[in-house]
Image (cartoon, rainbow, N blue to C red):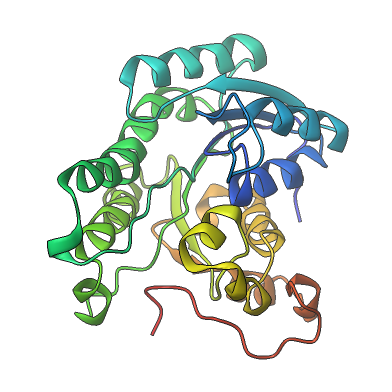
Amino acid sequence: MASLQGKTLFITGASRGIGQAIALKAAADGANVVLAAKTTEPHPKLPGTIYTAAEAVEAAGGQALPCVVDVRDEAMVEAAMKQAVARFGGIDILVNNASAIMLTPTLHTPMKRFDLMHQVNTRGTFLCSQKALPYLLKADNPHILNISPPLNLSAHWFSGHVAYTMAKYGMSMCVLGMAAEFAGKVAVNALWPRTAIDTSAVRNILGEGLAKQSRTPAIMADAAYAILSRPRDAGTGQFYIDDEVLAAEGVTDFDQYAVVPGTTTFAPDFFLD
């Protein structure tokens, strides 16, 4: 497998969870990591800031650039991209990880939350991709990776939380369209977990008990690393599932990713039948 040494990754929502796990995996290769997130002060329910994440990246062997970014703000995104290029000379990889979630049915979804999910998930992904592409098109092996699901149009995945599903699928539609638009130039793919992933955000929404039936963010980081290390021509417009990616790389020990070693029954993630 190729290395990410010297590559520059721009990761949104990188102060914790899956985003931070991907950052640390790349840092172990000596990558440059731009940590683009809003959290600058500790949150009572969501541990970690862009600065603690930056310290962890440096400790893991990478170079870190923490940037205060609200992916809804065009000026902030543009400024962070320019900072990244000024510091590291370019951008090789964009990981659209930032996401907002509220699992409520139609009559219980305030429009403020509807707007937030669409602005962060769909618009934020489109915006960050749009602003990164001029730099990615100059890179040797450019990738965009969206942390978003396959486009499963079963009504089951819409009926209980249509607003969230629409917003999350917006990220996936960016994959579908941009992969074709930039075919042969930039690899644009999606990655989604087979099971629930134990993050602070998930615990706050679905409860602490789910953690025992979850896998750690490391499985998503390892799968992302495998995808981003490949040549851009190895695949684009793909909707990858974490354990399938790793199985193709020869991984057989998936117990290493279980929150509780020995677990055989995991809570499935959304959007996978």
